[in-house]
Amino acid sequence: MKNHAKIKEVVFWALFFVIFGLIPLLEKSDYHLILANHILIWGMFAMAFNMLFGVTGMLSFGQALYYGLGAYSVGLMVKNFGDIWFLPAIGLGLLSATLVSILIGLLVIRVSGVYFTVLTLAFGQLVWQITFKWYHFTGGDDGIQSIIPPGILANHTVYYFFTLLLVAVSIWVLRRLVNSPMGLVLRCIRQNPDRVRFLGRRVRRNQLRIYVISSFFAALAGGLMAGVDNSIHPDMFYWTTSGEVILMAVIGGIGQFFGPFIGAALIIIIQDVVGARTEYWSLIIGLIMMVMVLILPKGLVGEVQLLRGRFRPDAKNRGENGTTFSA
Amino acid sequence: MDPSFIIMQFLSGLMMATLLFLVASGLTLIFGVGNVFNFAHGSFYMIGAYLAYQTVSAWHANFWISVLVAALGAGVLGMIAESVFLRRIYGRAEEGGFQILLTYSFILVIDDLVKLIWGAEYKSLARPTGFRGAIEIGGLTIPSYNLAIIGIGLVVVVMAWLILSRTRTGRIARAAALDREMLGSMGVNVPLTMTLVFGIATAMGGFAGALAAPLRSVVPGAGIEVIIDSLIVVVIGGMGNFWGAWLGALILGEVNSFAVATVPDWASLFNYLVMVLTLIFKPEGLFASRKIRKV
Image (cartoon, rainbow over all chains, first blue to last red):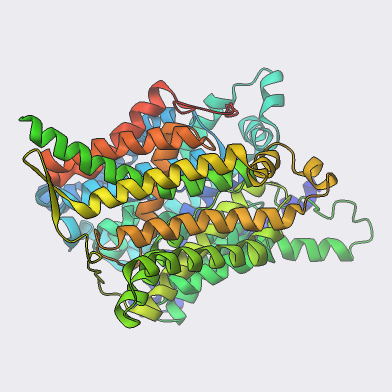
């Protein structure tokens, strides 16, 4: 099992660097470069989200809050102080996401299950409303345009490799975290919080930690995205953004570390194929979500693994409770 | 602030509270009885509003008939949603999360179906004849439709409470909340009960949506705002608690009404303020009927 996980990891990283490293060399058009960049950033965002949902069992419906916070830190700083502040602004976004997530986290981890989901949603919508209405500061519904990264980062290919590097480091950090003792505690919290308490571990403190960590990477995703699209919009705070990242994780498989990344890639490709944001986009993702929940609850990566497990002679672990996180 | 202003705002808050309670009580009913969290409850509210619009504007029916049509339609759709989709995930590991995801997919699908059928533009509905004017009481002019809503709300609250506490149906519902397996072994058709309870709850949502249609414009995507508000109500009152939901609705309705009158631009933020205060001081709700597992 351990060996198996190692192989999976090596395969993922090899594919990751080969595919995403070669795209800029093969593709001269900016279009596909931006598409690949979206996959990288959303993939990282979805993996960070899955640290909450898949690993710890906390279904947050408000991660858009931190995504938007990261993006708006960059947008507002660049707009008001010039593009030289692009990188410090990403740092500011991370810092503010950390502080805000500690404050909100202290409130929302007081409740669990459905309540947690709904309260994270409510806080997300709160910040969305403020952004939407505070026109002279945030630009309201217009958002902020022409956010150009400074210096050589303004070059799309350079910026692409910049995100590739940061995303790779982030995924590596998250991976280390899942395999760390803290990751083990988090997985235990998902399965049986009472027992974690009996073992002398603090459930709430660990939940707060992972909430802050996940939010930190959501803000990083937002900040990086501002540089890819060169514009931001209050919809980044909207609940549908949180919903989309959830869908990505569910499609790929919430019980898998790399699943959400695959899910993100799929959703973005589907989005691209059906013509980004058709009028009935939410019908499409709604139907996808329905199928996933009813028929393929383990996600694509999880179901593939389950199938493979069936053909192995020594298959003891057929994953009857296959949505449980296996690192 | 003169007293007439306060009374006016209080009454308008009472009306908002009634509508909120009608929606939130449906939500809390399914959660209390069936242990199902219906994230799409607000979408049934929206369906109710559209059905009322359809009945009145296209079929030229009486408004009160359209309210009944809306409640029935939302109820039937709710029963279909429960028996075709939700039933399949009962008892699955991590059911709670999947309930949210599945009902979330309902929101997305219903939103777009509504857009497909009725278009994305705003729809409006006139107040019913006989309730277009205002009534004067002691120098105050109160819109008569607001009073009608408050009255209807009171009747529904009392009826629902009587049914829940005094009838056999209510006993079955309360028993289902406690132990479904035992209820089944007593010869009650539990799956049917669940479907019916779900239908009643979504019918209440549709009923509220139809009543609210003349007051607010009918627009796709309204479901999510409604669900957040009714969840704040439920958080204040304690999930699965009938009277708690009523108190929560009252608090939220009044806060909202006074906020709209004093700081109209930022009024909706006060809902969240109430929620945050509740969470800080009484996270299990003011009237928690069962202790939330503090995980």
